[in-house]
Length: 260
Image: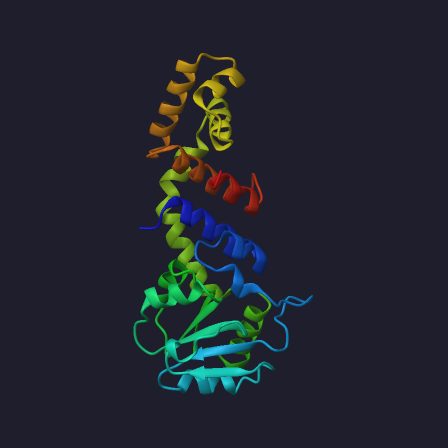
């Protein structure tokens, strides 16, 4: 089951349409060196290429036929290409169940899209968990597939809206009890959680609110119990998710609180 912190991070950035630089900064695995050579309009410079890792060749042929306007490098295995410095994005062809640990490892070096042939709906969740930059299928019309890959070249995650929508509904179902508890916090409890998010100690919380340190400790303990959170960081993350979805804060601020 995904953690609240992961849900906050993924929801905020996938839905808010953050640019490639922000996605790099917040992703738990994407390496900074993979994001060089971007030009003013957001696309990679002309010498960069699209890598297609395809042991069979069907997906590679489909991508080549799209006429993306950038070189296509086709290899059968990741080990066949050692240098990724000129690669804009990597595409992993999937004919059965992908090895998600391999996808996650590749995503640590270059933005990685999985293209399923024919594709499986349950793979979308696994792709998100592996920090893949997108999940597409060969069932998409050529124009739609081309737009998605071109969008990825501009730093836009390449997930189909219906698939992403299903994933979001699943995550909301998981966090719904936490959201209900968080919405019902009193003004004093919200003041405490804001101070916790800022890194304040119990003594500092007490001083700020004009209460004894022991009372501040009791407030924090009661707050964790109220939210059902195992620790302070988890409590802050829950509030960040609620505040983002309720419109209290922008996506970047919600995620920033979750990581305070």
